[in-house]
Amino acid sequence: MRILVCGGAGYIGSHTCVTLAERGHQVVIADSGVNSSPRVMPRLQRLVGAPLSLHRVDLRDRTALDALFTAYRFDAVLHFAALKAVGDSCRRPLEYFDNNISGTIVLLRAMQDAGVHRLVFSSSATVYGEPAQVPVREDAGLQVTNPYGRTKLVAEQLIGDLCQADPAFRAANLRYFNPVGAHASGLIGEDPAGEPNNLMPYICQVAVGQRERLRIFGDDYPTIDGTGVRDYIHVVDLARAHVDALEYMVRADRSFTVNLGTGRGVSVLELVHAFERACGRRIPYEIVGRRPGDAAAVYADPTLAQQLLGWQAEHDVDAMCRDAWRWQAMNPQGYRSTTRRATPPRLRRSRAVGARLADAY
Ligand code: UFG
View 1: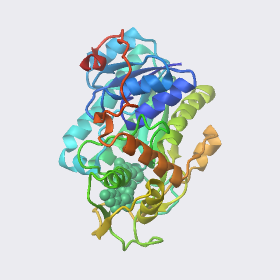
View 2: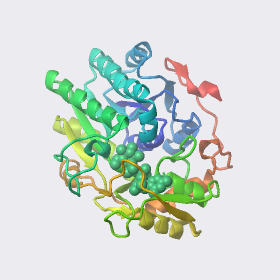
View 3: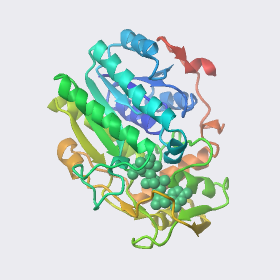
View 4: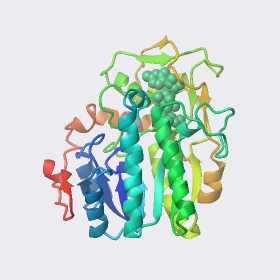
């Protein structure tokens, strides 16, 4: 299939592009560049062994989207393009509503007008809020506690309404738990701008010496060691789930919503210790107060994904830490790093429409 990957230059999108290409699909990336680097492209091309085109497109720009849909006959769209920082969303709710919700509406309209009616949507376990019980199943109550979460819930709902209204439209809502890790090559990985909001990239930056110590938000939760418990999932397993979901959606010709997690809860301290084993260094930390809005324990019941897609996570926490550390050690400054292995090969110019990030080199 020929797939439009919106947000394909970002962390999860870029890993999914590799898996799509490995499975024989043709990938075209649209990315606004707001939270991604064009330097991912030569690395991606090296991994997939073929040229990939990247178009600098903001999904709210209907004209640019239409040009893409006219230039290519897409079979499906994978939609990763969203702002995703919880705290930032509380400070800038309108920016989040506009980017995440308006962007999704414009994309859906462009898809409908172009006759493209298959969508895989990046949703989040954030739609469960503080779940009443764990492990969390897909039929658990939905509640959101911040503007970012609201954008994911609203997007899921409007995609659901479109599926009701348009008998041809099919969508897969994928509710991610906590994606971590990196491609085993160390060529692509998570590259947060500024101070990381999430645990794993923070640990990585402490391990590489960029930050002095980790602050652990609370050790008085009713969990195994008092620290928060989450369901960390290797990004390569997550990428495979997208392609499995896409292929299942086409094969079964149906819409669905699934959790993507391992089903195993891991505490902050357990993750810190696993990372110490992976990198052979001590991770200094201090215990501070709880972070407002954090739940004690959130982990998935991934049974439905197994039943529908035949998918389950394969990488354990040690593999997640090993791969996250390889990426961080090879690229201490993320995509701004210039290690020899990461030197971009000559980039083939994209032929297609829209501004070209490749031109930025
Ligand atoms: N934590 C720390 N110190 C840090 C960062 C995090 O102790 O510097 C703790 C948190 O308190 C929590 C755990 O590490 O117990 C995981 O925190 P993350 O911020 O990495 O992840 P969250 O589970 O809070 O949130 C993530 C995404 C959300 C998404 C949610 C879905 O950031 O966007 O998973 O479950 F909605």
